[in-house]
Figure 1 (cartoon, helix red, strand yellow):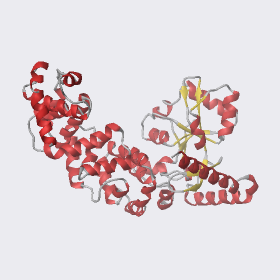
Figure 2: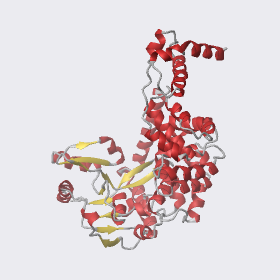
Figure 3: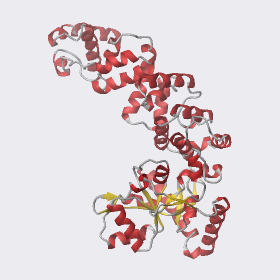
Figure 4: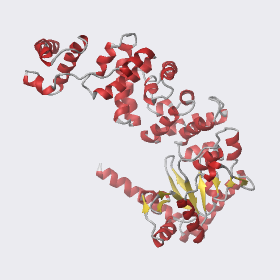
Length: 467
C-alpha cells in the first residue's frame, strides 16, 4: 500500500509539473491564449453588466462582526479585493442568516500569507493552501476561509488542477450552478454573471453554461444538482427535462467518484426537502448501479417505507429509508463497500435488512424488547436500531412503547457465567442471549441465582444445535 501511495504521489507531482510547464511564464503565449479562450467562452453566455442590485437586508448586516470588519479593512489597505462567495450569497438572497461566510479574493495564497505574517495574524488549517484557501484567525476569535480566484486548467471528472486569476468572471464561470456563482461585495453590491439571481427567484437549479461540460469536469456535480434542487425548489418534480437527460447520459461517470463523496451528498439529499422524490428521480436517471444499489433496487418498498417512517418521525434517518431499496442483507454489504458508511450506519443497515422480514407481522412489544437486549452491541445502541426498525414497519404504538421503556439491568455478568462453566469467546454471547430471553419471558424479575439454574440447559441446547 505504501508503494502504491508513493507511486500515486509521484504521478500527481509529474502531472502538476507538466501543468506548470504548460502554463508558466516561459510559455506565456499559450497561457494567454488559454485565458483568452476561457474569457471568450464566459462572455458569450454572461450578463453584460454583472452588477444587479444593492443588498441592504438584516441577513446581510448580520454577518458583520468586528473581526470581519477588521479583515475587510486589512485587504483594502493592501489593495486586494474580497467578496462573499457561494452559499452565503445564496442564503442572504433567500432571507436566511448564513452559517458560514466563504470569501473569494484577487490575492494569491502567497500574497495572503505575506500579509498575515506581516500583520502577526495566525493562520490555521494550512491543508487548504493546496486548494488556494488560506484561513486566518482574526483577533484570535474568528476564522475566515479565503480562497484565491481560479480557473480550472485540467479536469479529470473528479478533481481539477487550477490557475489563479484576478478575473471574477472566470472564477464564476468555473462554478457548478448559477445560484452558486454569485458574489456579494461588502458594500452590498450583488455581482451575478450568469443569471443566478433570476434562477433563485424562480427556484430553478441550472448549471453554469453547458450542463454536459460542467458535469464532465466533476461528476459529483450530478448529486450536487439534486441536493441544491431540494434546497431551493418549491416543487418535487419541476426538473428541466434536458438537464435530466444529460444527467442520465453521464451516469457512468459516478463510477469515478469515491463512495465517501457520493454518500456525503446523498445523505444531504435524503435529509433535505423532497429527499425521497429526488432519490426516485436519481434512480430513474440510471444512477443506482454506480452508487452501490442492487439492480433493480426495490423502489416500491422504498416509497412505502418513506411514508411509514415520516408518519412517525418527520426527521428521516437516511439509512432507514435507504435500507428499503435493498433486496437482501448481501445488498447491504455491497452498499457499505461502495459508500463506506460509519460503523453506526453500517450496523443499522445490516440490522434492518436482517430483521425486517421476521418482525414485519409482530404486534407485541416483547420480541422488540428482546432484540434490544442482544449482546452484539451496547443495549442503548441496539435500542436505537430497534426504534428505527419499528419506524420502518410503521408500528407507531410499539415505537412509542419502546421509546418510553426503561432498559432493565441484566443481573448476571459474563465473568460469573464463565466461572460457572460457560465458554469464553463468541459462544459466551450466545449463552447470554439465551438467558436474556428466559429473563425477559419472566418479566425481567429473575435473580442471578435463578438464571444460573438455567445455565446447564442452555449449554446443552447450544451443544446439541452445534452437532
